[in-house]
Image (cartoon, rainbow, N blue to C red; front, top):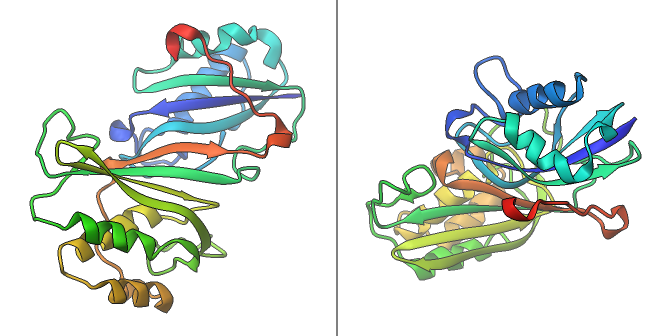
Length: 261
């Protein structure tokens, strides 16, 4: 038994999420079908993170245990997958391991998400950017982002998940970047994220930047660990799972065909 590790990108618009569920099309479902078609094996796809309906990914990592993982040469795996996957999912990197010890989710050191908002209502960006009709202050947006740095219990800024044992996360980076053209992008990195966390934080930061809440109120809400003090969640379409990092000792390096980089 070997482990096939894939780095994937997908447009989440037409998916109900990453993880398999009974109410619609999922990324896990289409990946499982592709693996079965290429390798003739039914397996379980394990992802580094779980994205909601409408959320996108640029560098999601998944793994699958396979008996015949060597059936396709390493330099042909990416092209083989992209030949059978739907157009809204692409394999952008491949890593093949001769062991069964690697775990895409539990071995991750940190994950990075981005969220993009825009003052301009651009129809070409409507699937990936949250248009802001109301004015907001960029300096306050950045100040509010700093509130979430460090280790905190993010119960207030999360969605209820009965399976969640702990809401404590360590945020290493939380910064807004001015992209020009009225667009701003949040980049946030943490050791782990809880359900709905980034969308909840973006909603709170926008409320603060619009003058609806103060920085002290946001900080107090974080400490209270009470969802009644949350702001409305930002919509999913501005959110992108950017990347995941693993310990160097695991030697996770991805092969990518030049023409598909």
